[in-house]
Length: 255
Image (cartoon, rainbow, N blue to C red):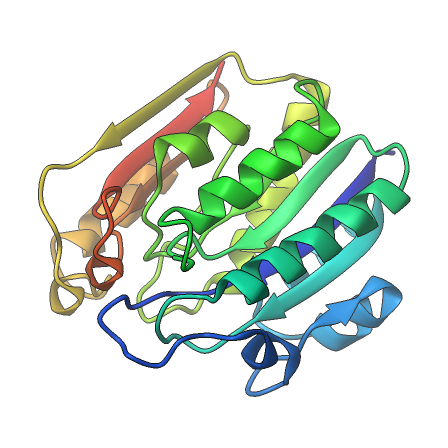
């Protein structure tokens, strides 16, 4: 049984939008829970189609002990303010420190969060978590289908499984898949990783997984996973983030 710290901080940022995303937008509940911490987090996300909910359920079934940190999200809008990013990041890291020794960390992220002072806000958060726990503790972060996966994110995390459906119907299942991936990493650390960016932007209107090309590509990625390939994902990206690491990526890991 492993002791796994679990947290979430989600935002899909449209840098063309004029409405900034302040701290209050993460604190206040909307269609999803507001900022929740500790055991309150487990009650708030239970039964919802969210990656963190799927992860917690699957990790429990696999015999692991979950240590809840915090979870929050805000509706898509403009850049996340410096205050919001720094406040929530500090809270998450403080709760991680208070949690004591953990065998692994799981984070429920979006992958297209842009802050006032960090174009790659998800990468910066992962970098801080990695710095806090050291190089030996595995980190797995689940990402949205529209994640803009950056080199910093890849460097900080052991695996970055993404949703495979748009419209998104597999969010909780992605969290459960992340739990299974982390379970295998705890048994046998990954030794090989691949990361490729594609030199174009894919409009959202072409990203539906009910039509080609993604109707074929997403099942193909899943089919290629197995004994040697632990995780293989295609993230079409979120062009409206309009940052340097914007665009489609393919990322995989294994042995």
